[in-house]
Length: 159
Length: 126
Image (cartoon, rainbow over all chains, first blue to last red; front, top):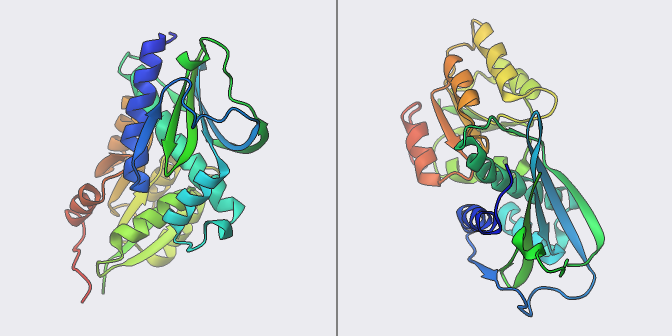
């Protein structure tokens, strides 16, 4: 069961607004296509990925954080005065847990449609050379956001 | 004796956030990163409440619950599930294993406290 572009956007927006502001006590803003805060150059990212399956993969949920945002979020949760002192393990933990919560919200969509969903453990990796995909239509599955002045994105790919 | 609360979650983020919620209250907070560690801490410390994740490496929340319920000394320990997973099948499984409440992440502090306070005495720290 794939999602329409509108469903995908609505699902992403409802998941992000339910999770991020509550977890980090920071407001989030959805960015429109062409917004200057969406990075145009190659940048490093911290990616969290959860696969939702029902025997076969239904969907992957990918959260991409600019490293500065991951550091700011982890410093806030783990109580570090200096975001640059956050250990890598804590950066991965917070990105993975946020991705896990977002995937839980996305899975609820399938559950409400009678599917029996399994969530994979979150896999977090550093993507040193990420380039935002500006191919027409990609915005149907990927929403861009700003939190604490930093970009992040949520991609929901259905199969 | 202040009540002991055991948080079993593979995410340090969740364990830290739970610590922040309960720190203003007279209680002892214990932690474990998976079901196997959780069982060992539970056997040693006899917690008054366990807050348990579902998906964890080594031993998941269901297996830990089954082990708890099979242990005569721990089988009555109240458990609140705290998980991102809202599937009705899993809720039914843990309900059959005597889970007292089920909270979907992210949790709201006041709701979690209200549910915990139904199971253990929570007095503000002096």
